[in-house]
Length: 321
Ligand SMILES: Cc1cc2nc3c(=O)[nH]c(=O)nc-3n(C[C@H](O)[C@H](O)[C@H](O)COP(=O)(O)O)c2cc1C
Image (cartoon, rainbow, N blue to C red; front, side, top):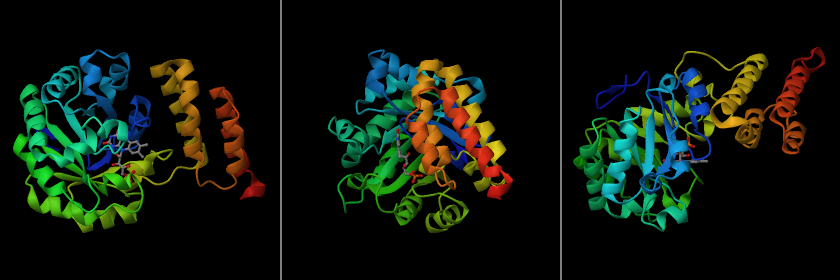
């Protein structure tokens, strides 16, 4: 059982925060499939400060998905504390701080992974947020900002001094973005240095990699990011509570995903966002390339669902067995 501050998680397999992916519908689906915890995508603390509609939409939640964490990015302690206070007071029992985003438009403002050049500022931000809320505060780091210069240990120690209740480490430098392989030994070095729980992020995609990541790092929990896209079942597989779905279950979850998108985001947004998920759901399935092409040319989500249904019927037909 993973305990983060006063929060006890159902298990230690966690849905990673992913911009454009881990919205409320997807978090609900992953939790229903056994994810022990989930995070919103990164939300700008400055956006919250200036009351940007988009920032609040990204933090949309419902009681059924709780407990979940809201992830904030920013570099000004007072503004981070202000945003954290708003979300901690509106249903989120955990605040996470993004110190890993590699994108130039974020790091150019000294936010995301750029913070990993300044452990003193990390401590100040975490301290300000911790003092503003009465829920656990966690930090998500990379291996370091400048390639070859690993600062994960000193940054994790700074976060711990500031009062963080856990730290997640993605073992890549900023310049690596998502290429190559995450260095799990970097997570082991952080684990050896801090007393708070350490969560590993990067390249956990199945049971073998989950076991290997645990063994290499001694981490207290694992985050699953890209491997969950179109594959929310990964959580029940990793937590040992179920296996891969058959095509009829696969289709019913895809339909449920569309229904949740419509319910929480409205039909217009559902239409524009469903397609990418539909394509992820088909990834790696036999003969799905031509189906993906058809989906790319289709606007209407109901028509996309019908194309997928037809494809699964074809897959399950006796001549394909
Ligand atoms: C599309 C995409 C969006 C991401 N957005 C975020 C984000 O908003 N906040 C964050 O901390 N990490 C973000 N990440 C990084 C992931 O949380 C994770 O650390 C990384 O993908 C490595 O894990 P994986 O190999 O399991 O995908 C993002 C990754 C991807 C692929």
